[in-house]
Every structure is written in C-alpha cells, then in structure tokens.
Image (cartoon, rainbow, N blue to C red):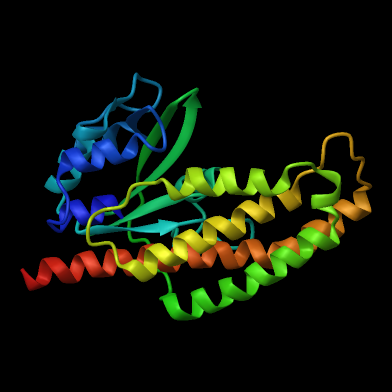
Length: 255
C-alpha cells in the first residue's frame, strides 16, 4: 500500500521509510542473485543488506507503478508464477509483494531481533491475481467473526486461559496501530481492522493454554474448524490492499 501510494504521488519516500518502522526497527535489502543485484544496484544475498531507500530508487527507475500483496499458503500460491524459488520463499514466509510494471517480487523475512530483510527476485511474467471484490470479502469476514467467537467458546479457550479478552485486545491494538497512507479508502481500513480482530481470536484459539494438554485428534479437529476462518481473514486482507492500491492508482491518473 505504501509503495503504491508513493509511486502514485500520495506519499513521500520519507513517509514510506518512516511507516516501515512499525513492522521492524531496521529494514535491509538483498537481491537473490548477481544479475538482479546489478540491475537494481543492491547487494546480493549473502552480503550485508543494503538500504530500503536504494530499493525505492531502483523501483522508480524500473518504472514500477504499484504492487500486489500475496499471502500464499500450502495449496494456494496463486499469483506467484508457479514453481520457482520466489514462490517457495514466499510460501515459507507466508507473504510477498509482486510489483506492477517490472518483473520483480519481494519477500520480507525476519533475520534478527528487530531486523526485517527484503529479498528481491526477478520473477519474469507473474500471472495477474484474480480480482477479490471487497464487499464480498467483508461479508465473508463478518460471518467468520461470528463463527470465530463461537469456536473460541466451544474450544473452551476462555475457560482455560485467564485474561483471554485482554490478550485479544492487546494483539488487535498493536496491529491496528499500523500507519497507512493518507487517502487510504475508509472501507479498506475497516476491513483490515476487522481482519485484525478475527485473526487475534483465531490465533488464541489455535494456541494451547499453559499447562493444558491437547490430544493430537483434538488439535486436528481444532485446526480443521479454524482453517476456513483463517482463509476468510487472508482473503479480506488481500481484497482490502487491492482496493487501496486501485484507489491510489486512480488518484494518479486523475492528476
């Protein structure tokens, strides 16, 4: 969202760099191989990481127009271009960015306490992801929130874990503090907030309460019950980011 806002005139480069501090105190950048590193003028993997500002400059030179979020999970790596090192790394990380206008993909991974490393891949012609209607995603997420609350009660999470409501509130508060560019559509922000709330509930429902032994069969049933709800959260986040990127792009075209 931030790189799309910046590329389309809705944010300054310094705004992007400042916003990234919410997710890690330090961000650095490496290229997956020498040819990609040479083309973008960033260090190669295995070397000390370069600065994000240098990557932004390279992205601008490459005529990138925006980005697309990917949140791959086992069995669903659509939009990553099939089997490749990029797809495998993105799947392991659980997230990636596919840039528009240049054959580039980025995967963020924590490499030390407070340090997030972005690896840049040349991904060739990645296929476009299918459009995710925000209204449909929001509707599914609303239903998921009701189901999640019921699952939380059914699994006895609140009963076996003291202070569960406070834990949920704290997790939501941190995620909701994430800064977003000025002009981000309110509906997209609302869906992201709702996704944070549902995700916090699901994460607690997935965890074992301290000292609470769970049989393998019970854990499997729990995972099966929660999987569709995690999917609803993932789709909602993808749809919200897609809508924000579209709005920033439209803003640039009008100006």
